[in-house]
Image 1: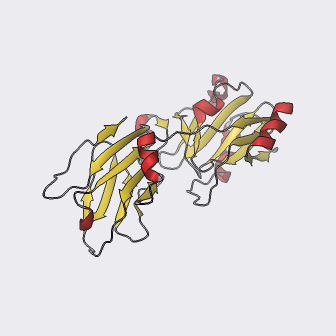
Image 2 (image 1 turned 30 degrees about the horizontal axis):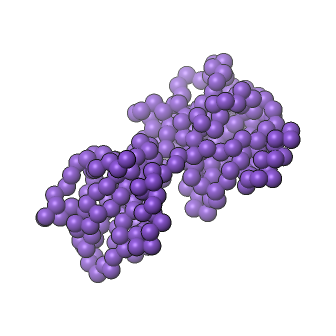
Image 3 (image 1 turned 180 degrees about the vertical axis):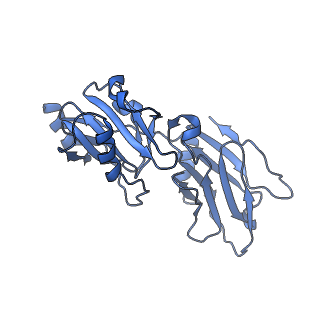
Length: 258
């Protein structure tokens, strides 16, 4: 108990919503109750949090800014029986558990590796506890440029198939990791584009989608031949690319920076 209070004193916490009326199982009845509550959406005002607080029983939570590495956060905590969310695209539950008996009432399930920020999920705990949230760390080559005042940053979560546009509408990015079902696991589908600040007058937009990383870019012609970086959260890799032009044709695989 002292450890819990120490964590609360040192870190910003996320208090889960306790669900006392839901029985401690993952029966079809429980699945239906949880499914009524879940809403998957990107919440732009999410804040960075360091600690989850859970009570014994089912807890409802939303992943904080930066998301949550499920395996690293929960793998050494036997008190956590089950972590689960619902993938609206595949219509499958996605879960992580160290106790396979929890899964006896479910036929198909995706393996839950990462919870993207703004995603609602549920945790079945056997006790009251606090856990430090662990997240993907961005490669230093990408993170250093992200803090450069001469560059802009544009994120896409991959939770929808819509592209994310810059405020000036002269560049956009879309994650092409749009489905969890075909891989059999639910993971981080975020991508971030780090690109130079330019004065753009053209309304003409060009399109480019490399095979690796799996992103789709639209950009004004002024960006042609300019370098950019992409951090792929699924692969946890930083890539360098050049916006294609007549001088620089499209390259299917971008250069990985280690």
